[in-house]
Image (cartoon, rainbow, N blue to C red):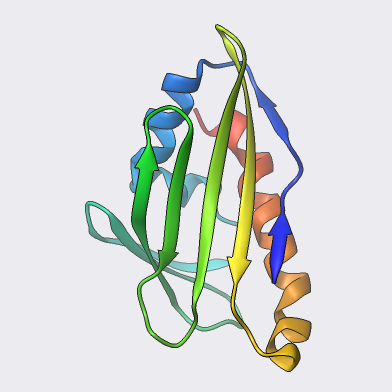
Length: 131
């Protein structure tokens, strides 16, 4: 299953956006209102929970300076990645898009498609105001 957030324009350079999103503690500012838990476990790993859903542990899998950050599930139950793609529009304007990719059986994919789509849209749309 592959899902994408809308492309969001941010009045910041790619380096500022990258630095902000590379610090996983900042993801707490991007979480939906119904978050029930957020905890930084290590520099590159955090756990969060949204009301009515199980806890999810994400860890940084890779990054390419100023262009992308890939987070992935740290628990073996779910196999997915969340990639943040950062594109320069000008020296002081960037575009961000979140790409979710997961390997789920058809029944699970059908159940989680709506909530995951809403989740990544929320993360993306909160980025400009989080700085």
